[in-house]
Length: 284
Image (tube, rainbow, N blue to C red; front, side):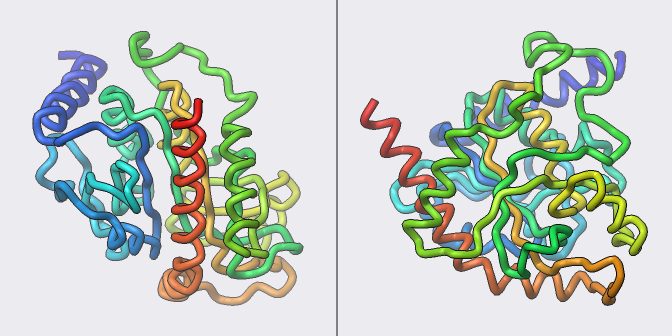
């Protein structure tokens, strides 16, 4: 069996399993990042599946990523929650990292809301801000679409001139205003391989490339989602702001703690975004 056929088989096996297990298929998936898994607690669950029980799913090795697929209702809205993700620095390829999104796209999920914690690069940002993605830089050195294309899944050369849905960005900004959140910004997210954090020179270079924030996740999932024709909204909690001339030591524990402080605001924002998305759909 070729590598392409092996991967197709793994995806299809997982699709069949989840189709049999899930009581319904929502149109929306929310992927929760580092230190941001608390939103799952607000979901009224119909089913919780640990990742290790799902065929061919990778297993998260990062302690702040609980590793559950949860299907249920968030304030009345049907959703799938991916409570935790995978990273290339764990040893996974970007194709493996994006495996859950590929599977969910084939089940009919059409919108991805994705969160992570990131370091700020834009000196105008403040720690504790929430950044809405308007573009990104893929600096992983890998792409989940590398290799033979599966034409049924998406085009060989997908267009990325508008990577993030403008209507979703507008809804997110309007939702932030409704929630009274004054530290919500838009920006360019840069994804690096990790797990080492940025040096002063790397920080200066990333700023020069036009990046407003930097992290080690999310882009493989986003690329696969767009390849599959899904709408994507990306949200980063800015845990700190890096000054290349006055760099301070950064510890993962501090990133998780900083994300936790902003998490209640992010939860309010996501809930309002979802309310507006579904209100729009029901009035069409």
